[in-house]
Amino acid sequence: MRLVLLGPPGAGKGTQAQLLVDRLAIPQISTGDILREHVQRGSTLGIQARAYMDRGEYVPDDLVVRMVMDRLAQPDAREGFILDGFPRTVPQAQALESALAQAEQPLSAVLKFAISDDMAVRRLSNRWTCPECKRTYNMEFKPPAHDRVCDTDNSALERRADDDELTVRRRLALYREQTAPLEAFYRERGLLKEIDAEVREAEVAVRTNAALGVVP
Ligand code: AP5
Image 1 (tube, rainbow, N blue to C red):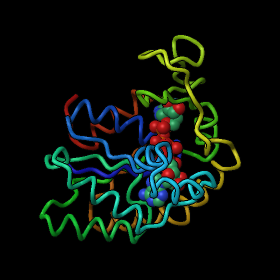
Image 2 (cartoon, rainbow, N blue to C red):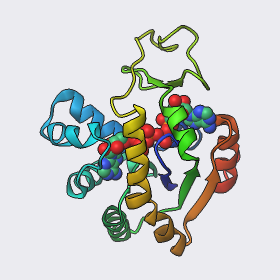
Image 3 (tube, rainbow, N blue to C red):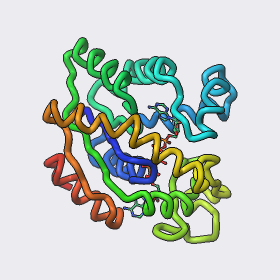
Image 4 (cartoon, protein in one colour):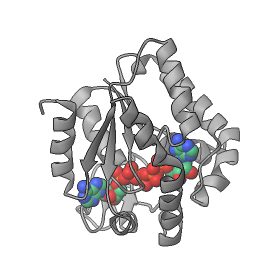
């Protein structure tokens, strides 16, 4: 299955992508995660991307498209993939469409997770992530067993630099302006499946399975 996950910041794309990895045995390709790894190791791409990311702006299309095409060429993406956070602009969607058409591997579906702006702010201001295993927690909805420590590897949990309310509101505005047009782009192609994601994580997973026709 070749999937794209769409939805505003905090909609639960990363959370649902991880559950789909277990269910479908195909890799999650999160452009946010890949870019943060570049920033962490100080690569040329990381240095270029950092300023955009900290301000809650999008990294330029040419950089992101090249990065995703390299990732899709890896052997583990041959049997399918879950694109989490890509595409985010019409030029990115067009680049993906033509690359997949050339490979004769069109998308299977695009899932759009919908939540309100206030819920996005509430979820992201409570998000903490393990810097080692990347597991995501939420102090309100999914707290770790011990305060600010990862259940899996005991690492100290961290907050993301772009999760303060002002930056989240900026990211939400950018989503509406640049990414929401992709909903019509994929609806026209008969690929869009919309999921009301303002319910608990397990219920979103049930809705996702139903939308994809996957038996849990
Ligand atoms: P990215 O990391 O992709 O951020 P995002 O799209 O803003 O999405 P988030 O990771 O914030 O939210 P999510 O929907 O994955 O929610 P999550 O599952 O974590 O991108 C970061 C930046 O990188 C961008 O701003 C941009 O600068 C750059 N970038 C990335 N891709 C790019 C591209 N293609 N082009 C250009 N630039 C790009 O959940 C959030 C919280 O809610 C967690 O705490 C979770 O536990 C909790 N939660 C999840 N589901 C539920 C639920 N159902 N109920 C209660 N709590 C829940």
